[in-house]
Image (cartoon, helix red, strand yellow):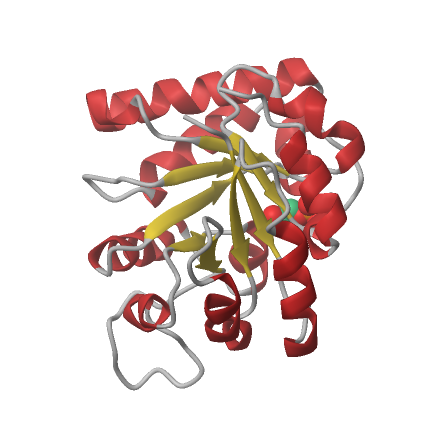
Length: 243
Ligand code: PGA
């Protein structure tokens, strides 16, 4: 399977950026799959700019309900209606700043799957948990409680301390964590776990992408800051191994 390079624009970007960005990323050589996850207001215009291209579109969150009196929230069906095929769920910034617990994430994942979206479920330890030698146990617990029965989608391992800091785990720590995630998925989902992609996220840049993307069990990258510059996203995508 080709690797997936997913751009998490977070709360950045504006309408005027879209056309040039879309034009630039369409020059990618195509051996990695590309996914752009802009803020909600940019989804539909991005869908128009990317129509008919192989670049996929995703959102960064959704509500667990299909509709209802939830001021300020957006449902998975609305995202699909705007052209999204993927949605990032359980990002550490949502867990930290919006109080999302594993059970909330699991409910959102179920809603996304019901709307035929592919969920990208984020897990990852804090620096204190890593220093205490608890990183793998912590991530296993998050997986156990954040994935609903019958889960199908993508995982993203994002150590919280690596997000936006310029720091990344050592290759051996990434390999150990991705292997632990794979075995936890097999325990939870059985044979269905075999084909699931596990992305790495946290300070992925053109300069370190090759060393991260060649590691076993790394199925691509979730890229924040560097994804805002089309040339940097392309440079990262070019580091994906050819299959
Ligand atoms: P970063 O963000 O690449 O800016 O570290 C990654 C993420 O939060 O998904």
